[in-house]
Amino acid sequence: MSTTPSLLDTIEVETGDNPTAAVIWMHGLGADGNDFAGIVPELGLPDDMAVRFVFPHARFMPITCNNGYTMRAWYDILYFEDIDRHADENGIRQSLADVEALIKDQNARGIPTQRIVLAGFSQGGAIAYTAGLTYPEQLAGIVALSTYWPSPALIEQNRSAANAATPVLAAHGTADPVVPVALGRRARAATEALGNPVEWHDWPMQHSVCLPEIHAIGRFLTKALG
Image (cartoon, rainbow, N blue to C red; front, top):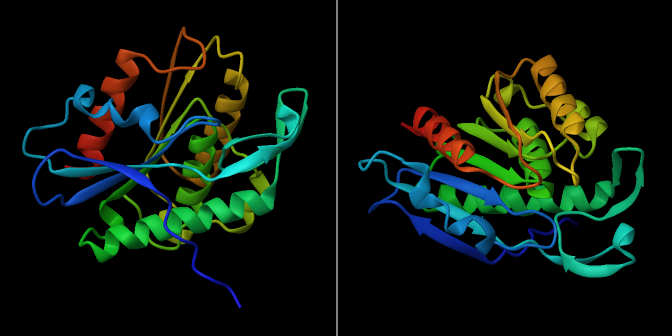
């Protein structure tokens, strides 16, 4: 018998009273929900857009490729092969269930799925890609930053017709030493091959975000949720 996962702890930031839209934003490996909570005022959203930003804290787990060190993570990374990461698919599925629970929590609080954007950075972006492209109800958009597809087979085999045309914003640093930009470009090409429109940006930076990227995210959210 399957059980509903307990809701992850989160940080919430609301840009106005009675939000009519939500952004669920997943952090990177070893970070937590505080990582991007301070970014909201810099997005430049319209004053009349009431959006609830939800920044969940991933569960703690040992990471095999980091000598078993325990940290917050969305899935275990078993090993590296060239630039590829071999992700634990069971861990990915657990995180997909966690994201589903967060979406349903927003639904219960009055925000329909089609008014929700999934966003994430690095490993969190990998979950945003996977959850967004496979979720059975239509989402407003996907934001994938400095990231990749963690399990192409899982996405391709569970492709959601409801999100076949959901817009994606993908961005990456061209000097990223952690997640090479080649992985980001590969994910972009695979997403476009599914038929999703992808707005792609890259900047001369490492594994981080920059102000032009933040502004691009703000424009994307304004269009997707406006």
